[in-house]
Structures are given as structure tokens and as C-alpha cells.
Amino acid sequence: QKEVEQNSGPLSVPEGAIASLNCTYSDRGSQSFFWYRQYSGKSPELIMFIYSNGDKEDGRFTAQLNKASQYVSLLIRDSQPSDSATYLCAVIGGGATNKLIFGTGTLLAVQP
Amino acid sequence: DAMVIQNPRYQVTQFGKPVTLSCSQTLNHNVMYWYQQKSSQAPKLLFHYYDKDFNNEADTPDNFQSRRPNTSFCFLDIRSPGLGDAAMYLCATSRQKADTQYFGPGTRLTVL
Image (cartoon, rainbow over all chains, first blue to last red):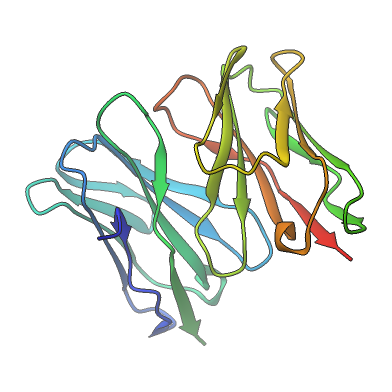
């Protein structure tokens, strides 16, 4: 079982719609959860982080965390073509390693 | 602006010819990381420094070494690059272990 799992996509949504990106993780002791956006050929850019169960909103982005289900998601409202990128879910596991574990990412394509 | 800088952005080397990639940061973060990312894959942690304390991932090839002469700079040395080492190399920093990681723009390495 992979430590952090994401659907590779592509997830195609029309411009203006809500894009929903999902991620599950295997380490129940994980405490910190991150979403990075990565454009093709570029480096990961932090979009949001979340530590507590529930929702966290920042502009058009909402991160949702459910530790009981080991599930974290990212909602993008009013999707724009410029949102087209790979979205990487990353988790810092429990224990002493403090290592950031990445999923392989979901490719989002926003159609004009 | 505080940031993570990587040089060069693109590096071409010949099979077996040593190469050094550099990373600098103005964030005054204690932790610096080197990741390798190949196409359509998640970033893979190679090493990290917590201040001067060096941590090597168990599966990082012996061909890869790192130096951190001071808080601001960190280098990745590839002693004898093989074709399989062609990848994007990402430097990241965090204030402390388990804190949010911020990435530099990356260095794209091509091995001929």
C-alpha cells in the first residue's frame, strides 16, 4: 500500500466549475498535510496546509481533512485555465522521521 | 523577498563527469532538503540537513553527496552521473523539522 495515494487523473473540469482533488494516507499518526501545485517543468508551489480536522479556506481554495477516514481533499472554486497543473498531496508522517511523503499527484485540466 | 534560489536552472553534463548543483536561501531556515524528481513521479528525498546535522536517506545512491558549508548554502554533488540520474533536482527549506517546506525553482539535469 502506498503511503499517500492520489488519482493520477487527468481530472477535466470546465472553466468556472469546482474541481475536487482527493488524497488518502496510510499513517494514522500523520499530523500535517499539504497541497502543492506543480506546473509542467516547474517546482512545487505551496497552496495550502492543514493540521486540524475540518475545512480551511484561502481564497478560491478549501482544504478538507478527515483524520478518522485518513482523507484530505482540495476544492478549487471557480476553476480557471491557469489552475491547470499537477496537484501534489503531501503528508508529514507520525514518529521521529518528520519526513514529507508525497503522492504522485493529480493532473487537473480546466477547459476554457 | 525571502526565497530559495537554485543554480544553475539547467545543467547538461556528460556521462561520468562530476557535477555540482547549488542552493541558497534567504529565509534563515534551519533545515535544507534535496529531492530528485523524475517525469510523472513524486519528489524523492535524497538528503536533508538539520543545521549541520546531515541525514542521508537509506536508498540514496552513493554517487550522490551533499555539503552545507553554512546556513544559507547547500550543494548536491553527483560524482559520476549516469543516464538514470537525469531528473529535476529540487532544493527545499523549512524553519524546523516537520514545518512547511518551501521549494526553489529546481535544476533540470541532462546527462549525455
